Length: 458
Image (cartoon, rainbow, N blue to C red; front, side):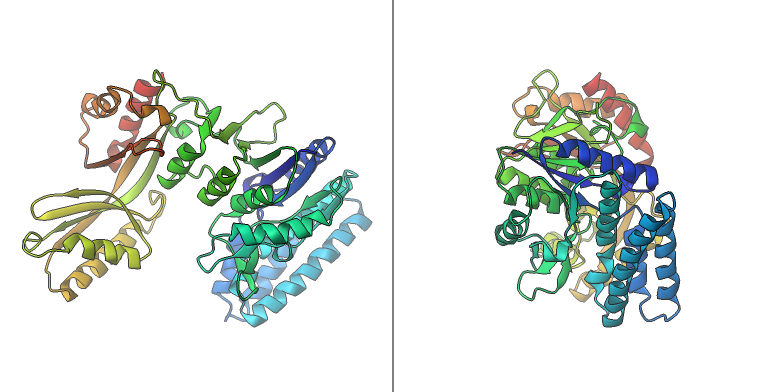
Protein backbone atom coordinates (compact mmCIF):
# COMPACT_ATOMS: atom_id res chain seq x y z
CA UNK A 1 0.00 0.00 0.00
CA UNK A 2 1.19 3.53 -0.80
CA UNK A 3 1.46 6.06 2.02
CA UNK A 4 0.59 9.74 1.78
CA UNK A 5 1.58 11.93 4.71
CA UNK A 6 -0.35 15.16 4.28
CA UNK A 7 0.70 18.21 6.24
CA UNK A 8 -1.97 20.93 6.33
CA UNK A 9 -0.64 24.43 6.93
CA UNK A 10 -2.51 26.80 9.20
CA UNK A 11 -3.27 29.08 6.26
CA UNK A 12 -5.51 26.39 4.70
CA UNK A 13 -7.33 25.59 7.96
CA UNK A 14 -9.27 28.74 8.64
CA UNK A 15 -13.03 28.14 8.58
CA UNK A 16 -15.84 25.66 7.89
CA UNK A 17 -15.30 25.58 4.12
CA UNK A 18 -11.54 25.11 4.29
CA UNK A 19 -11.88 22.31 6.84
CA UNK A 20 -14.50 20.59 4.69
CA UNK A 21 -12.12 20.84 1.72
CA UNK A 22 -9.28 19.37 3.78
CA UNK A 23 -11.49 16.52 5.00
CA UNK A 24 -12.68 15.77 1.46
CA UNK A 25 -9.06 15.71 0.28
CA UNK A 26 -8.15 13.17 2.97
CA UNK A 27 -11.07 10.91 2.04
CA UNK A 28 -10.24 11.08 -1.67
CA UNK A 29 -6.62 10.10 -1.04
CA UNK A 30 -7.75 7.40 1.40
CA UNK A 31 -9.60 5.44 -1.30
CA UNK A 32 -6.38 4.01 -2.74
CA UNK A 33 -3.69 4.87 -0.18
CA UNK A 34 -2.88 4.89 3.47
CA UNK A 35 -3.26 8.47 4.72
CA UNK A 36 -1.79 10.18 7.76
CA UNK A 37 -2.72 13.85 8.15
CA UNK A 38 -0.44 16.18 10.12
CA UNK A 39 -2.21 19.51 10.77
CA UNK A 40 -0.73 22.75 12.00
CA UNK A 41 -2.64 24.99 14.37
CA UNK A 42 -5.23 27.15 12.66
CA UNK A 43 -3.97 30.48 11.41
CA UNK A 44 -3.30 32.83 14.35
CA UNK A 45 -4.05 30.27 17.07
CA UNK A 46 -0.42 29.63 18.05
CA UNK A 47 0.00 33.34 18.74
CA UNK A 48 -3.01 33.19 21.07
CA UNK A 49 -1.35 30.39 23.03
CA UNK A 50 1.98 32.24 23.09
CA UNK A 51 0.12 35.23 24.52
CA UNK A 52 -1.40 33.02 27.20
CA UNK A 53 2.03 31.91 28.37
CA UNK A 54 3.51 35.40 28.12
CA UNK A 55 0.72 36.76 30.35
CA UNK A 56 0.48 33.70 32.58
CA UNK A 57 0.79 35.80 35.76
CA UNK A 58 -2.17 37.99 34.78
CA UNK A 59 -5.22 36.31 36.38
CA UNK A 60 -7.62 38.04 33.98
CA UNK A 61 -5.81 37.30 30.71
CA UNK A 62 -6.21 33.52 30.39
CA UNK A 63 -9.97 33.35 31.07
CA UNK A 64 -10.56 35.91 28.32
CA UNK A 65 -8.38 34.06 25.81
CA UNK A 66 -9.85 30.69 26.76
CA UNK A 67 -13.33 32.05 26.04
CA UNK A 68 -12.02 33.51 22.79
CA UNK A 69 -10.68 30.12 21.69
CA UNK A 70 -13.94 28.41 22.52
CA UNK A 71 -15.90 31.04 20.59
CA UNK A 72 -13.68 30.67 17.51
CA UNK A 73 -14.14 26.89 17.49
CA UNK A 74 -17.90 27.14 18.13
CA UNK A 75 -18.23 29.26 14.98
CA UNK A 76 -16.49 26.53 12.97
CA UNK A 77 -19.02 23.94 14.14
CA UNK A 78 -22.00 26.29 13.84
CA UNK A 79 -23.13 24.71 10.54
CA UNK A 80 -23.00 21.14 11.87
CA UNK A 81 -26.19 19.36 13.02
CA UNK A 82 -26.72 20.39 16.62
CA UNK A 83 -26.12 17.02 18.37
CA UNK A 84 -22.94 16.53 16.37
CA UNK A 85 -21.73 20.08 17.04
CA UNK A 86 -22.38 19.63 20.74
CA UNK A 87 -20.34 16.43 20.77
CA UNK A 88 -17.46 18.17 19.01
CA UNK A 89 -17.53 21.12 21.40
CA UNK A 90 -17.65 18.76 24.39
CA UNK A 91 -14.36 17.26 23.21
CA UNK A 92 -12.88 20.73 22.68
CA UNK A 93 -13.97 21.61 26.21
CA UNK A 94 -12.16 18.53 27.52
CA UNK A 95 -9.00 19.67 25.74
CA UNK A 96 -9.40 23.18 27.16
CA UNK A 97 -9.56 21.61 30.63
CA UNK A 98 -6.16 20.09 29.87
CA UNK A 99 -5.01 23.57 28.86
CA UNK A 100 -6.21 24.80 32.25
CA UNK A 101 -3.81 22.34 33.89
CA UNK A 102 -0.94 23.43 31.64
CA UNK A 103 -1.52 27.05 32.63
CA UNK A 104 -1.61 26.16 36.32
CA UNK A 105 1.68 24.26 36.02
CA UNK A 106 3.29 26.92 33.81
CA UNK A 107 4.26 24.41 31.09
CA UNK A 108 5.27 26.65 28.19
CA UNK A 109 5.66 23.91 25.57
CA UNK A 110 2.36 22.25 26.45
CA UNK A 111 0.56 25.61 26.28
CA UNK A 112 2.14 26.82 23.03
CA UNK A 113 1.66 23.44 21.34
CA UNK A 114 -2.02 23.12 22.27
CA UNK A 115 -3.23 24.70 19.03
CA UNK A 116 -2.03 21.76 16.94
CA UNK A 117 -3.91 19.30 19.14
CA UNK A 118 -7.08 21.38 18.90
CA UNK A 119 -6.74 21.47 15.10
CA UNK A 120 -6.33 17.69 15.00
CA UNK A 121 -9.46 17.08 17.07
CA UNK A 122 -11.52 19.41 14.89
CA UNK A 123 -10.21 18.01 11.59
CA UNK A 124 -11.17 14.51 12.77
CA UNK A 125 -14.78 15.63 13.24
CA UNK A 126 -14.89 17.06 9.74
CA UNK A 127 -13.61 13.80 8.24
CA UNK A 128 -16.19 11.88 10.23
CA UNK A 129 -18.90 14.29 9.06
CA UNK A 130 -18.11 13.18 5.50
CA UNK A 131 -18.34 9.56 6.66
CA UNK A 132 -14.60 9.00 6.57
CA UNK A 133 -12.95 6.33 8.71
CA UNK A 134 -10.48 8.23 10.87
CA UNK A 135 -8.67 8.23 14.22
CA UNK A 136 -7.00 11.08 16.10
CA UNK A 137 -3.74 10.52 18.01
CA UNK A 138 -2.30 13.18 20.33
CA UNK A 139 1.14 13.93 18.92
CA UNK A 140 2.69 14.00 22.40
CA UNK A 141 1.84 10.30 22.65
CA UNK A 142 2.61 9.30 19.06
CA UNK A 143 6.33 8.69 19.52
CA UNK A 144 8.00 11.95 18.47
CA UNK A 145 11.14 12.51 20.55
CA UNK A 146 12.62 16.00 20.64
CA UNK A 147 16.24 16.80 21.45
CA UNK A 148 17.42 19.58 23.74
CA UNK A 149 17.98 21.84 20.69
CA UNK A 150 14.35 21.13 19.64
CA UNK A 151 15.25 19.09 16.57
CA UNK A 152 13.64 15.66 16.09
CA UNK A 153 15.67 12.62 17.11
CA UNK A 154 14.65 10.82 13.93
CA UNK A 155 15.99 7.34 14.65
CA UNK A 156 14.52 7.09 18.14
CA UNK A 157 11.29 8.75 17.00
CA UNK A 158 10.97 6.23 14.20
CA UNK A 159 10.88 3.39 16.74
CA UNK A 160 8.01 4.98 18.66
CA UNK A 161 6.10 6.05 15.56
CA UNK A 162 6.29 2.56 14.04
CA UNK A 163 4.92 1.09 17.26
CA UNK A 164 2.07 3.61 17.51
CA UNK A 165 1.07 3.71 13.86
CA UNK A 166 1.76 0.04 13.20
CA UNK A 167 -0.91 -0.91 15.74
CA UNK A 168 -3.59 0.91 13.70
CA UNK A 169 -5.69 -0.32 10.79
CA UNK A 170 -3.93 0.96 7.62
CA UNK A 171 -7.32 1.49 5.96
CA UNK A 172 -8.21 4.07 8.58
CA UNK A 173 -6.90 7.60 8.14
CA UNK A 174 -4.87 8.89 11.06
CA UNK A 175 -4.64 12.47 12.23
CA UNK A 176 -1.45 13.17 14.17
CA UNK A 177 -0.78 16.89 14.76
CA UNK A 178 2.71 18.27 14.35
CA UNK A 179 4.99 20.52 16.41
CA UNK A 180 4.62 18.64 19.71
CA UNK A 181 6.42 15.58 21.03
CA UNK A 182 8.28 14.65 24.18
CA UNK A 183 11.78 15.42 25.39
CA UNK A 184 14.10 12.61 24.38
CA UNK A 185 15.40 12.18 27.95
CA UNK A 186 12.81 13.57 30.38
CA UNK A 187 9.72 12.71 28.29
CA UNK A 188 7.97 15.93 29.27
CA UNK A 189 5.92 17.62 26.54
CA UNK A 190 8.25 19.53 24.21
CA UNK A 191 7.73 21.49 21.01
CA UNK A 192 9.96 21.38 17.97
CA UNK A 193 11.52 24.41 16.38
CA UNK A 194 9.40 27.26 15.05
CA UNK A 195 7.09 26.26 12.16
CA UNK A 196 8.37 22.68 12.30
CA UNK A 197 5.14 20.77 11.55
CA UNK A 198 6.66 20.03 8.11
CA UNK A 199 9.41 18.15 9.93
CA UNK A 200 6.92 16.04 11.87
CA UNK A 201 5.28 15.04 8.57
CA UNK A 202 8.65 14.00 7.13
CA UNK A 203 9.39 12.07 10.33
CA UNK A 204 6.19 10.07 9.89
CA UNK A 205 7.07 9.34 6.26
CA UNK A 206 10.58 8.29 7.28
CA UNK A 207 9.30 5.92 9.96
CA UNK A 208 6.57 3.95 8.19
CA UNK A 209 7.21 1.22 5.63
CA UNK A 210 5.07 1.32 2.49
CA UNK A 211 5.33 0.52 -1.21
CA UNK A 212 5.88 4.23 -1.83
CA UNK A 213 5.91 7.19 0.55
CA UNK A 214 4.99 10.76 -0.42
CA UNK A 215 4.89 13.79 1.86
CA UNK A 216 2.51 16.52 0.72
CA UNK A 217 2.80 20.04 2.16
CA UNK A 218 -0.57 21.71 1.62
CA UNK A 219 -0.35 25.48 1.37
CA UNK A 220 -2.53 28.25 -0.04
CA UNK A 221 -0.46 28.43 -3.24
CA UNK A 222 -0.50 25.95 -6.17
CA UNK A 223 3.30 25.55 -6.18
CA UNK A 224 6.53 27.28 -5.17
CA UNK A 225 7.03 30.52 -7.08
CA UNK A 226 10.37 31.29 -8.69
CA UNK A 227 10.23 34.66 -6.97
CA UNK A 228 7.68 36.41 -4.77
CA UNK A 229 4.72 37.53 -6.86
CA UNK A 230 5.07 41.14 -5.78
CA UNK A 231 8.08 41.30 -8.11
CA UNK A 232 6.08 39.96 -11.05
CA UNK A 233 4.61 36.73 -12.37
CA UNK A 234 7.59 34.60 -13.40
CA UNK A 235 5.92 31.25 -12.97
CA UNK A 236 6.22 28.38 -10.52
CA UNK A 237 8.67 25.55 -10.14
CA UNK A 238 7.85 22.03 -11.29
CA UNK A 239 10.83 20.55 -9.48
CA UNK A 240 13.49 21.42 -6.92
CA UNK A 241 16.31 19.29 -5.62
CA UNK A 242 16.59 18.74 -1.87
CA UNK A 243 19.72 20.88 -1.84
CA UNK A 244 18.12 23.71 -3.83
CA UNK A 245 15.11 23.86 -1.53
CA UNK A 246 17.42 23.74 1.48
CA UNK A 247 19.46 26.64 0.12
CA UNK A 248 16.31 28.65 -0.56
CA UNK A 249 15.15 28.12 3.00
CA UNK A 250 18.58 29.02 4.39
CA UNK A 251 18.55 32.23 2.37
CA UNK A 252 15.18 33.25 3.78
CA UNK A 253 12.39 31.66 1.74
CA UNK A 254 9.69 29.84 3.76
CA UNK A 255 9.50 26.98 1.23
CA UNK A 256 9.65 23.93 3.50
CA UNK A 257 11.21 23.64 6.94
CA UNK A 258 14.89 22.69 6.45
CA UNK A 259 14.66 19.84 8.94
CA UNK A 260 11.80 18.35 6.90
CA UNK A 261 13.97 18.44 3.79
CA UNK A 262 16.90 16.82 5.61
CA UNK A 263 14.76 14.00 7.02
CA UNK A 264 13.05 13.29 3.68
CA UNK A 265 16.37 13.26 1.83
CA UNK A 266 17.71 10.49 4.08
CA UNK A 267 15.35 8.03 2.40
CA UNK A 268 14.79 10.04 -0.79
CA UNK A 269 11.15 10.60 0.11
CA UNK A 270 9.55 13.05 -2.34
CA UNK A 271 7.93 16.17 -0.93
CA UNK A 272 5.17 17.84 -2.96
CA UNK A 273 4.25 21.46 -2.16
CA UNK A 274 0.76 22.23 -3.46
CA UNK A 275 -2.74 23.43 -2.60
CA UNK A 276 -6.00 21.49 -2.37
CA UNK A 277 -6.88 22.01 -6.04
CA UNK A 278 -7.11 18.48 -7.50
CA UNK A 279 -5.57 19.76 -10.74
CA UNK A 280 -2.55 21.23 -8.94
CA UNK A 281 0.60 19.16 -9.47
CA UNK A 282 2.60 21.44 -7.21
CA UNK A 283 6.37 21.52 -6.87
CA UNK A 284 8.18 18.20 -6.47
CA UNK A 285 11.16 18.29 -4.11
CA UNK A 286 13.39 15.28 -4.72
CA UNK A 287 16.85 14.45 -6.03
CA UNK A 288 16.09 16.13 -9.36
CA UNK A 289 16.42 19.77 -10.41
CA UNK A 290 14.63 21.41 -13.33
CA UNK A 291 17.58 23.72 -14.01
CA UNK A 292 19.65 23.39 -17.20
CA UNK A 293 22.71 25.08 -18.67
CA UNK A 294 20.34 27.28 -20.67
CA UNK A 295 18.20 28.09 -17.59
CA UNK A 296 20.55 27.54 -14.65
CA UNK A 297 18.70 29.50 -11.93
CA UNK A 298 15.77 27.83 -10.16
CA UNK A 299 14.64 30.69 -7.95
CA UNK A 300 15.46 34.11 -6.54
CA UNK A 301 15.02 34.75 -2.82
CA UNK A 302 14.78 38.23 -1.35
CA UNK A 303 15.02 38.95 2.35
CA UNK A 304 15.55 42.22 4.22
CA UNK A 305 18.22 42.09 6.91
CA UNK A 306 20.29 44.47 9.02
CA UNK A 307 23.80 45.20 7.77
CA UNK A 308 26.20 46.05 10.57
CA UNK A 309 29.16 48.32 9.78
CA UNK A 310 32.14 48.38 12.17
CA UNK A 311 35.12 50.73 11.74
CA UNK A 312 38.11 50.55 14.09
CA UNK A 313 41.70 51.68 13.62
CA UNK A 314 42.83 48.87 15.94
CA UNK A 315 41.38 46.20 13.65
CA UNK A 316 44.66 45.55 11.85
CA UNK A 317 46.80 45.75 14.98
CA UNK A 318 45.17 42.98 16.99
CA UNK A 319 44.20 39.51 15.82
CA UNK A 320 40.79 37.92 16.37
CA UNK A 321 38.67 41.01 15.74
CA UNK A 322 36.24 39.24 13.40
CA UNK A 323 36.09 36.34 15.85
CA UNK A 324 34.85 38.72 18.54
CA UNK A 325 32.10 40.03 16.26
CA UNK A 326 30.93 36.58 15.18
CA UNK A 327 31.07 35.37 18.78
CA UNK A 328 28.85 38.23 19.90
CA UNK A 329 26.26 37.48 17.20
CA UNK A 330 26.34 33.76 17.97
CA UNK A 331 25.62 34.41 21.63
CA UNK A 332 22.70 36.59 20.55
CA UNK A 333 21.36 33.69 18.52
CA UNK A 334 22.08 35.36 15.16
CA UNK A 335 23.76 33.99 12.06
CA UNK A 336 26.15 36.03 9.93
CA UNK A 337 25.72 35.49 6.22
CA UNK A 338 27.65 37.96 4.05
CA UNK A 339 30.86 39.57 5.25
CA UNK A 340 32.80 42.37 3.58
CA UNK A 341 36.15 43.40 5.05
CA UNK A 342 38.44 46.37 4.51
CA UNK A 343 41.66 47.63 6.02
CA UNK A 344 39.94 48.98 9.12
CA UNK A 345 36.32 47.99 8.57
CA UNK A 346 33.96 45.03 8.61
CA UNK A 347 30.39 44.94 7.28
CA UNK A 348 28.12 41.94 7.66
CA UNK A 349 24.48 40.96 7.34
CA UNK A 350 22.72 39.39 10.31
CA UNK A 351 20.03 36.76 9.81
CA UNK A 352 17.24 38.09 11.98
CA UNK A 353 14.53 37.08 9.48
CA UNK A 354 12.66 39.31 7.07
CA UNK A 355 12.52 42.59 8.97
CA UNK A 356 10.95 44.84 6.33
CA UNK A 357 7.48 44.52 7.85
CA UNK A 358 8.68 44.99 11.44
CA UNK A 359 7.55 48.44 12.53
CA UNK A 360 10.03 48.37 15.43
CA UNK A 361 13.09 47.47 13.37
CA UNK A 362 14.77 50.88 13.79
CA UNK A 363 14.44 50.63 17.56
CA UNK A 364 15.56 47.00 17.63
CA UNK A 365 18.54 47.70 15.39
CA UNK A 366 19.60 50.69 17.51
CA UNK A 367 19.46 48.49 20.63
CA UNK A 368 21.50 45.77 18.90
CA UNK A 369 24.15 48.25 17.76
CA UNK A 370 24.43 49.71 21.25
CA UNK A 371 24.89 46.25 22.77
CA UNK A 372 27.55 45.43 20.18
CA UNK A 373 29.44 48.68 20.84
CA UNK A 374 29.32 48.12 24.61
CA UNK A 375 30.60 44.57 24.16
CA UNK A 376 33.52 45.70 22.00
CA UNK A 377 34.29 48.46 24.52
CA UNK A 378 34.45 45.81 27.25
CA UNK A 379 37.00 43.95 25.12
CA UNK A 380 39.25 47.05 24.91
CA UNK A 381 38.11 48.46 21.55
CA UNK A 382 36.37 51.72 20.67
CA UNK A 383 34.83 51.10 17.23
CA UNK A 384 32.41 53.21 15.28
CA UNK A 385 29.29 51.07 14.84
CA UNK A 386 26.28 51.75 12.67
CA UNK A 387 23.82 49.79 10.60
CA UNK A 388 20.85 49.86 8.28
CA UNK A 389 18.42 47.45 6.66
CA UNK A 390 19.49 46.15 3.24
CA UNK A 391 17.95 43.73 0.75
CA UNK A 392 19.78 40.43 0.39
CA UNK A 393 19.11 38.87 -3.01
CA UNK A 394 20.03 35.23 -3.62
CA UNK A 395 19.98 33.25 -6.86
CA UNK A 396 19.82 29.47 -6.35
CA UNK A 397 20.19 26.79 -9.00
CA UNK A 398 21.99 23.48 -9.37
CA UNK A 399 22.93 24.08 -13.02
CA UNK A 400 24.75 27.31 -12.21
CA UNK A 401 27.68 25.09 -11.32
CA UNK A 402 30.02 25.11 -14.30
CA UNK A 403 27.81 27.41 -16.41
CA UNK A 404 30.10 30.01 -18.01
CA UNK A 405 29.01 33.63 -17.71
CA UNK A 406 26.37 33.20 -15.00
CA UNK A 407 28.07 35.66 -12.64
CA UNK A 408 28.34 38.19 -15.47
CA UNK A 409 24.62 37.84 -16.13
CA UNK A 410 23.72 38.24 -12.45
CA UNK A 411 25.96 41.17 -11.62
CA UNK A 412 25.43 42.70 -15.04
CA UNK A 413 21.84 43.38 -14.11
CA UNK A 414 22.89 45.57 -11.18
CA UNK A 415 25.12 47.59 -13.49
CA UNK A 416 22.32 47.89 -16.04
CA UNK A 417 19.97 49.47 -13.48
CA UNK A 418 22.76 51.51 -11.85
CA UNK A 419 22.57 49.78 -8.46
CA UNK A 420 25.63 49.35 -6.24
CA UNK A 421 26.35 46.01 -4.58
CA UNK A 422 27.01 46.49 -0.85
CA UNK A 423 28.36 42.99 -0.18
CA UNK A 424 28.28 39.60 -1.84
CA UNK A 425 28.97 35.91 -1.29
CA UNK A 426 28.83 32.82 -3.43
CA UNK A 427 29.15 29.08 -2.97
CA UNK A 428 29.84 26.45 -5.60
CA UNK A 429 31.16 23.66 -3.43
CA UNK A 430 29.93 20.21 -4.39
CA UNK A 431 27.52 18.61 -3.64
CA UNK A 432 25.61 21.74 -2.65
CA UNK A 433 24.03 23.78 -5.45
CA UNK A 434 25.69 27.10 -6.23
CA UNK A 435 24.14 30.13 -4.57
CA UNK A 436 25.01 33.70 -5.39
CA UNK A 437 23.94 36.29 -2.82
CA UNK A 438 24.46 40.02 -2.76
CA UNK A 439 23.11 42.97 -0.82
CA UNK A 440 21.75 46.23 -2.18
CA UNK A 441 20.15 49.25 -0.54
CA UNK A 442 16.63 48.35 0.56
CA UNK A 443 15.01 50.96 -1.67
CA UNK A 444 16.78 49.46 -4.72
CA UNK A 445 15.46 45.94 -4.19
CA UNK A 446 12.43 46.12 -6.49
CA UNK A 447 14.25 47.46 -9.52
CA UNK A 448 17.14 45.02 -9.01
CA UNK A 449 14.98 41.91 -8.56
CA UNK A 450 12.76 42.74 -11.53
CA UNK A 451 15.80 43.27 -13.75
CA UNK A 452 17.30 39.98 -12.52
CA UNK A 453 14.07 38.09 -13.24
CA UNK A 454 13.87 39.55 -16.74
CA UNK A 455 17.43 38.42 -17.41
CA UNK A 456 17.16 34.93 -15.91
CA UNK A 457 13.53 33.85 -16.30
CA UNK A 458 12.29 35.38 -19.55
